[in-house]
Image (cartoon, rainbow, N blue to C red):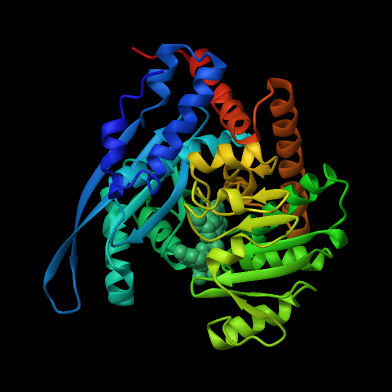
Length: 429
Ligand code: NAD
């Protein structure tokens, strides 16, 4: 199937291997082809429904006005409101946001939550902005998008450099316009303002639930399973802590500056305490230092890249030695690397399933807000487990049935669901 977006993709950040839009589209095309997707539906689904660009004037602390550029892309509404984070970064681009919004559509469809995909971004450098400037930026961005977001339209969430405070500002600004409190307009809010218990841990916990299922295919028990984790933030750090509690042997973990390795297993609660106290893993006793590049190539049963994109490429894929690759991060593996991993027999838990615990509990948060009735954390975690286990098994079954790798299966399953709903709804004219 021809790919008319190729030129646009190539311009993205100047590199084939570093282009998430290209990675997404390449996989979409392959899955669409295998599904024999109707060309009319293909044409509808490969483009976003709406791309919004806003210019945001903000009064800076100096008294001068600076105008920022912001985006919100709503990729697909076939199955429900758009859903996805907002990132603040100096180098965020519309193409990047477009790719991320499409990923959200497929992710929500893989775990079968009734959302479409969306993503937002503002070109800014939050590290150089005061709290007041960030608040004014966030509120004006929300006001510019006021007609396009809402519990039934598009539900933003935190992403890179945005957090629960950002969500509280968006919720408040939206509520001031609506003249009443609308908690369900965003997820990832503070628990006291309608956030869900268990949301903070949900992505790492979801990674663990999918790993629990994957190791059964290798007749492994957690205590026999060695795990290497790249990244020690919300996904990697929490995922490692939860897996450690289940008895997994975490042999290496890293942050952006490098990692630590101990083949007998690390005491993860102590490692995380050390990281909190020292802001680095460097110098942690009872472990050897290891670079992020070498860490990926360590002997282990499970490798969980939970840091950033494009970590496993055609350059290093051949040296990856795990049995299971659990993609906590978004897009950690390039399409070229996929084939190499497949030929090596590595079982991949693709990102759009492995890290979908976050959006699943975001869905639970939205449900709780709309009911005005909040669940205990045990219930959130139990429902998350049910969702992740069912989605994993559906995906594994689909891959076996169609004789495709798990990533292709995830895209096929997602595209099939969105295509079915699009076909049933028909095209309004
Ligand atoms: P985070 O900022 O909390 O942690 C990121 C970790 O990765 C940190 O330890 C950081 O030091 C490390 N890191 C950053 N850049 C790196 C690099 N170039 N090399 C090695 N390590 C690096 O972020 P997070 O929320 O844990 O997100 C991690 C990944 O998971 C991202 O790809 C994100 O899009 C994805 N994700 C996050 C969530 C969520 O709920 N937080 C949900 C779905 C997907």
